[in-house]
Length: 131
Image (tube, rainbow, N blue to C red; front, side):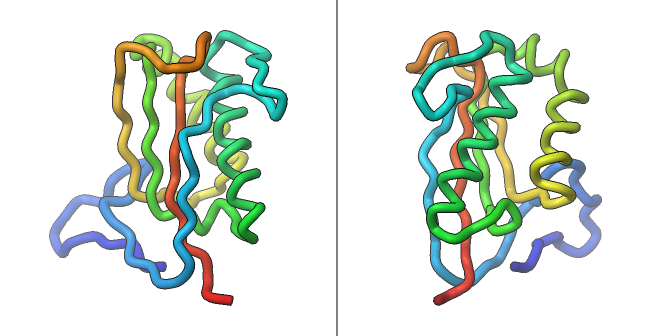
């Protein structure tokens, strides 16, 4: 995996502009902050983010992957004020679960999510080594 940073560009903080990878591609569908029984244990964005990221990692593990294999992640959030207020906490959760690995990421604010009372949904693309 090779992080792409064009010459002369300032390094982004908390994401990569692009990643080049070769191997098996794994697509992980949008994961919300519910547990394995599809029950939300909280209506707050911080525990929902943590659970959604754990869900991404659990699905990825089924393919033999780990967090550092994620090349792209998109986050959909329907509560921008809550997200902005929780950025430090969300960053701490990211570092706890993902370390210093920052894939190419986009944050998209939306009106609502399908699964209520979901506040955030994450989807990912990972590239694992060939078998």
